[in-house]
Length: 544
Ligand code: SAH
Ligand code: SF4
Ligand code: F3S
Image: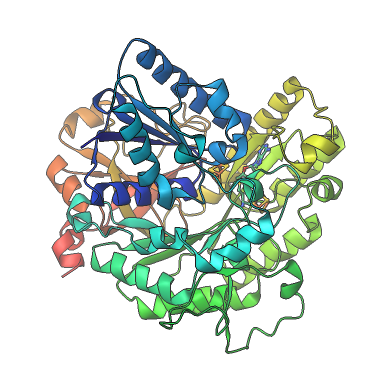
């Protein structure tokens, strides 16, 4: 049997897809290697969202091309959004690529690999038809693709998810769960509606069942995934198979959110879904969700969050720009005022919520004034962090055909850097607010760095730099605590927290558990503190 190397680029959705693909291939007998050199099937699960993401993947494709030219017998597959966006043209330009599989067709991947294996096993290789090694949603129109979702093959990939019985012992106790695929929003700059197709919502019973099974295999944190999770919507009684099982369902138009009666018993809204998962899967210590859309985020969701302690008070809710003119060109569908109304409402109902987002700088026609407005918006909202992107024109989107990419790269870079500095100040203030308080931290990793001194580094501390973690620097204090190990994890509000544990063995034991930490210092992107009580925090006592 072949050995596979699978590398993932792009968003959480892709990380989840890769996990599902891996589970599927493993169940068929494939083994996985951690290094590309130890595998004979190389799979890249790619992202198309910005040009930079694509060039990274292409450079990997180039390396494989050289190995194949040198005579190595390898199979190279490009999966995910790039495959879907570029289509078969990619095969002509990169003959080293053997197969293409779009994100909506991943259930067909084993068949594609099989086809390529069979045709290349003989010398000279048999000619294989393009359709035998390519699975893309491609030409199917969005509408028919969406309709055929009711007889959904891809759903089987989610349903067939492997539940790793070693999760609890390996310390990896966090998992993604898809609630919605695709996107109907068509922001003018974005490829996602083209690569992932129309919005399709999974039946709530499948989602709850998946959460339950993950919890049974040791997961304590789930992150629900969708491009705009608050647009999750499932109408019962319309898409049921003969055996009574509900099927995935196409998302409604945006108008559905205008006059809707959320009390409708036949409707599972995002709020109801959250409540169900919280109430029906009590083993989950943390329930998160990504990404929220600033519009149509009702108080019903905020109320569910306010009344259900295991739903994390964390919102990733990208604003993209602080200029109404640019938001309009982006087709985001809200104004700055509406965004602020929303974040104010969040902080009123959930005062300790943390808010993060994304910003695009240098969108076509963005002036200095527009950019100043984005800065004003940043100053107005206590963002714990913002991912800042330089506008990247994407083939196939409305923006690339409608607007010239007229903001020079130099200006984009300057605006990007300016926002990073501003965001660092805001992030520092948000994090500093937690100093002196106690937080629950889900421990994720040993940082493999020399622990920092216990005196709290300040924002001005040279060891804490923009966009970085901690830069090690030995102090006499650390020499004294030579065996101590630094671990990091996250609070319910997704604030990265580091603290020391006396020994490596204890640190290993804490992986995947939640411990109480008293916060003693902070930086723009980080909290650090001291574990409140090591004995109380050891795994067995926490999870009897
Ligand atoms: N569904 C999410 C975002 C998914 S893409 C949402 O609507 O918020 C993740 C981020 O990439 C976006 O929020 C946006 O900031 C950025 N992005 C998307 N397309 C881009 C482009 N063409 N150029 C630069 N950044 C882009
Ligand atoms: Fe892209 Fe907009 Fe959909 Fe987000 S909401 S995935 S930015 S089209
Ligand atoms: Fe990239 Fe596709 Fe995700 S374009 S951001 S991998 S949905």
